[in-house]
Amino acid sequence: MDNNIEKHKITVEGMSCGHCKKAVEEAVRALPGIQVADVDLEAKLLIVEFDVTKTTVLKIKEAVEEEGYTVI
Image 1 (cartoon, rainbow, N blue to C red):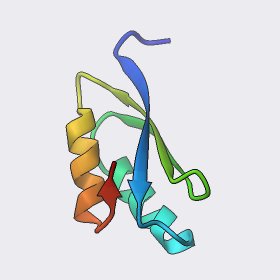
Image 2 (image 1 turned 180 degrees about the vertical axis):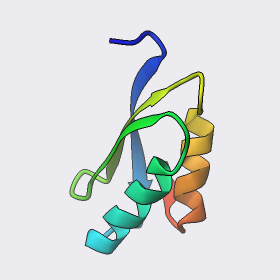
Image 3 (image 1 turned 180 degrees about the horizontal axis):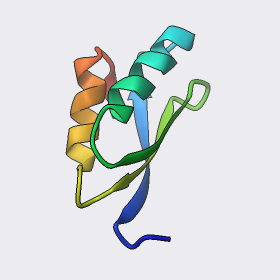
């Protein structure tokens, strides 16, 4: 595995349906360096894998919040 790749689980409040899941995943995937962006609606989790040389956890959280959801 590439040393620049990190995996994070981010808790996101306010997601309740397929549209919410898709909106969050698409917003995060639009960022540079994102390899995986998957939402688990039941667990209220966003699982991301990304290249730390291209984006940051803060930028990922901002992308989620811009869609109208709350990052815990």
